[in-house]
Length: 149
Image (cartoon, rainbow, N blue to C red; front, side, top):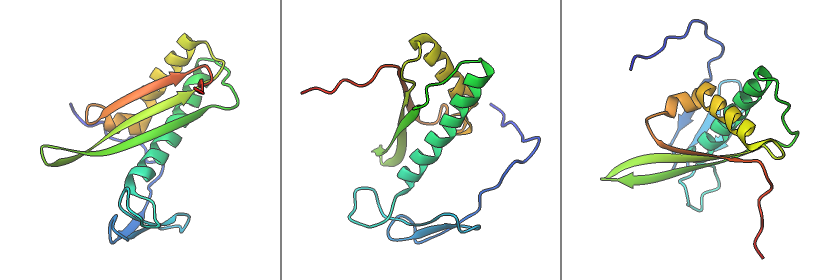
């Protein structure tokens, strides 16, 4: 598979990281993001790369959902949301990540919602970057979750 070259650059994020996930920090060149880092599951007071990746991917995916819906003239519910889970694991001594995205399109016809989410998964740059590289599960919710007593 060949890599598609960009025709036009839209934006470059610049981040300086020191110390890594064990007590380090990351700061963007414009100062809008300045976070302390800690290892997943530790008692450190910072976030971790997996949380940052989940936030970034879900935000980008949500934008792709809106683009696909607009292109297909589907009116989205006002409370659309994505719950992202990024797993860090080990297999044969190698560290790996996996992800689950749950897209809530409450009140939408399930087939229409699935079509929008499938289209968003094809458009989203994070989905493109991870496709075929990690295990990804995407679930579409069109009805409120039922809480068990």
